[in-house]
Length: 211
Image (tube, rainbow, N blue to C red; front, side):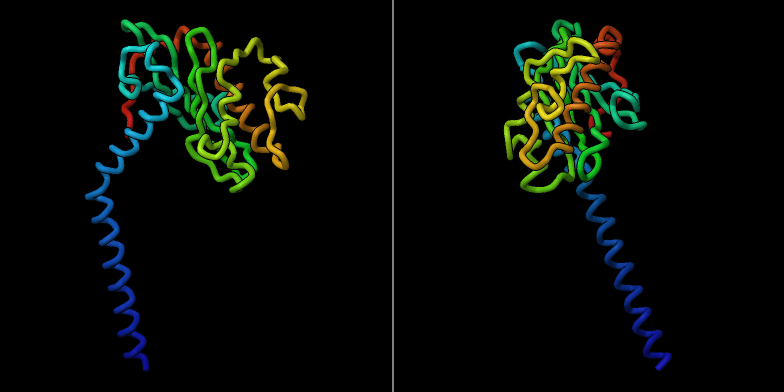
């Protein structure tokens, strides 16, 4: 009986070891391809939120790292991408986190012109409720376009709230927590840019996409 149990245990351990090794090998051989696909997807999103006609550089080529728990929603450094025209910064795409989504973190990216105008916003990742909170995805709803063309006049600009809170941005029917968190995160990113734009737009690239 003991020999049989020992044999089965060894076979199970060997099988687990082989599976782990197989996964490691697959990851090793697909790592570069995955990173390349991530870079392609990032470029696609950046070109959606920063118009091609206002810059002459490749957006993914000028990456900088930002750190602000208060304005970017995490104590981790997050990337931002500078758009330049004749080597002068004309816009930026800032990644930020809405930490108070209904189901946790919502990762977003906000395109902002050098004048402080919101050029576009997109959701990079989230775990909001399908059919309700996932209207923050452009493929489900055009709600994220509500931010296009907005300026933040001050930190007390009341327009930057959902309508239920007296602002100008729609909440979703039956779901206020998600859009409220999202609006706050976009507002914080724009506020951070407004307070630091000269420095941000002139910062040399200090990170690499996909690293």
